[in-house]
Image (cartoon, rainbow, N blue to C red; front, side, top):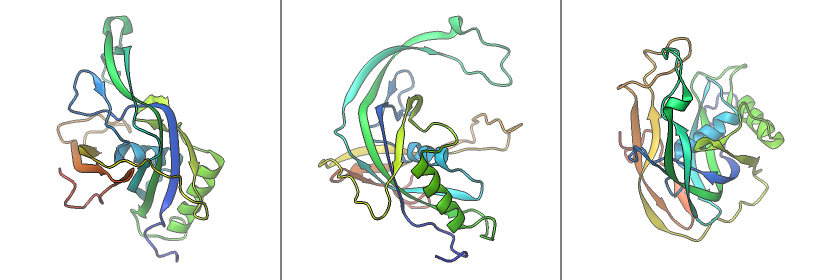
Length: 227
């Protein structure tokens, strides 16, 4: 690979955890998880290990390594969110009890690569960032603890080197329906690096399917991605 290249090679990362909740946006009251990790959640794990303004991650495939199991939990949540415009928040007045349908005992292999968002040069190039990711993931380093859908479900992770065989996914094939692909955020009103979602923020979806435990993820500019 030369310095002028704009795409990395395929990188493989195993992630796992006791619980996960990749929340379906159509469930407005109770939290209900998708069956499988979403591309946006996988991207979030990768960015927790290495994020740079000069690169953009593309998830290519997600392998499901453990049978899909569910767990129903009732818990207390706070029904409001603090922001710079909030004039204080008294948690006891905002506390709500809600049920949630979560995944339990999960493990996945994320196949992903990144591309440059700026022309490569000596400071910003694919080789440098690729080696940074491999080094950080191998040593367990991260900017913030990766999580599986919500921050309370932290994720363990390890790099799968290219000379190491991949973990076998589960033997299961089925249609998963439309799944959240990612959110395109409108940052025009952001102030002080604080983002507040507006009507300009748009979700995108794709038709997900599990084939022999593997879920293929289309490219973001693909016609398969519905906006």
